[in-house]
Length: 145
Image (cartoon, rainbow, N blue to C red):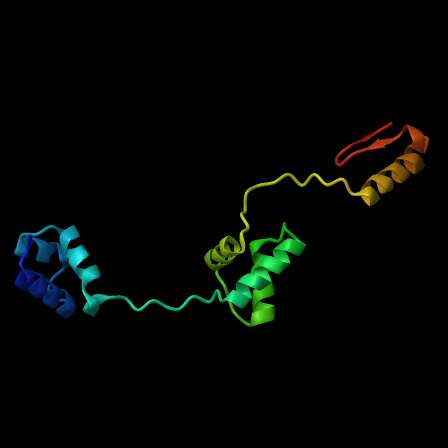
């Protein structure tokens, strides 16, 4: 346990930039990590963090757009937020919005059985290959005849 007087002296030296942390640690015979703990615990040396730009309205807009198109890219989300809310977000801020909205970016397979797609492939196969439509089986990435 270190005395309060020693902690105050170290903090005073840190605030005045007299020594580097390493030199101050050697001078006062304490570890550098101990000085770091004292610095972060002292209200005089506390950082002023910038307020987050991810308001509830931004999170709700991201949620709505991702429900509409779950495969939106980060760039598209950033552009949408800038257009709708006049706020520039970083990719990290977009990730925090997505987490708050309950979305993840896990890879998914884009297997979609869209009836229009199957019908278009069947029609293409019957026109180009000259095969009867009854004999064509259309899937996501293949056409059998």
